[in-house]
Image (cartoon, rainbow, N blue to C red):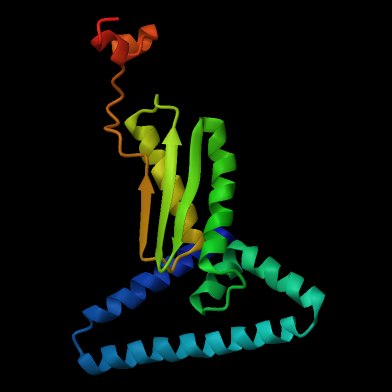
Length: 187
């Protein structure tokens, strides 16, 4: 199952099933099911941790493999889930924002990491000022998706700079190239 889309679908399905455990009317069944999930997670975590130790023991080639696993879209999430990712939160988010910045620069969007740590991330996203509301929404969604993929453990994500009203209204002064401030000052 190396297909990323299929992997993400299975992760979402597992999430739905785990959330559904709370709906079980039988308290004993609910408790047993939750305990089973927890034990399976701990078992897999211990196995993955041992694999990482064996790979690490291979020296420089092992370290290279661990780095590759940390950058792989499928294995990276598993390593984060079990607290085994080779990169800390800030490093993963910084790398993601740098990649986003390169992609969004083509759309005249500037993206910058302001803060990453203690479970929260703050990002500044600035456009050329001529974007419409749907563009802001698209940019916000792209940033959210990329950051949560790189750091699913964060509890808050603030994206600053996309708070404009997004109405798409462009004044005649803006179209004519005259700054609104000049028009207001009578000059």
